Image (cartoon, rainbow, N blue to C red):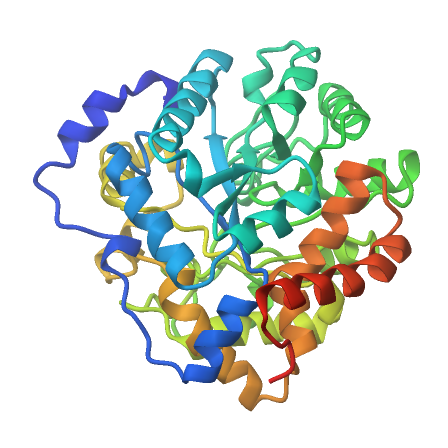
Length: 415
């Protein structure tokens, strides 16, 4: 059964009797005034999963969520427009509902085309919208659609989500022994992504398919980075007393993170509770989120780590869909079991990031380190892939742009 066969209306109806889950019920963690201000002064870029119909259904949800993010200093988000087995027509419907909602408050949103748009959104107090597709099925077999995706503003794309697709295998298929690797079609999709400056996102991709894709990138497009926009480090949880034998199928091994960093890319852990194998907290704590950041920094270096809540405005629809269609996930009940143990939410950046900042400061992280992790590393990669700007050039220009921006804001970067 594919996602496209389930109507949004059916999903909504299935959820009416469910309790509220997700970021709308996330805990707000206390933080110091200094950390709260630092987050507001710094460019912060998260990544969230929020398709219309399986993440939100009411335009007001969108406005409330992003107003809270703006109020707490979250500059923008790599934002999911499509996932799993989605058609071009459904992708356009997703895009329409996002844009129709944003058209109600045009003063609050800025669609990102280049890195300077992110800085402009930060200066103007707007939400920087960075479109991401968690699937390549939206091409409907037509590579020429990649040019249209570029014009729409899609900035990154995943080849395969959970199952087996024409491009290769997702992580769940791989865990079930069905990783077919990167296909010839998958290579053609990558060719078009590179041609149009769309970032290759290897989140949710099976290990053989992901490593094949990395091999292809390294051999065919040396120097072009690839990333994991929202992937938890498997190595952090493998020794947990309650960890499952195979681990959470969404989490990635260290060697994949190392390869992405070597390409010049970044890896962002997600603060989604059900992926924390062996823990499954009711509320992910700032320490647990900081542990993931710290793990990746120690593994790949501070220049290659980002952040991602992988948030849903409300996971009611997701819980309902996963419960009703558990066979499609074929994960041995892992996700539903985690939900039943209370892991139905995530650490929403607006509610947790300042507290994470306090924790990371206590571990010895500097303001410069955190500025890289919270947004600077992503912007360096974006500038390289979207604008063809060498990393050295961006790193030379960015401090001056940062200084000028701070002068305009009348704020100071040093704590």
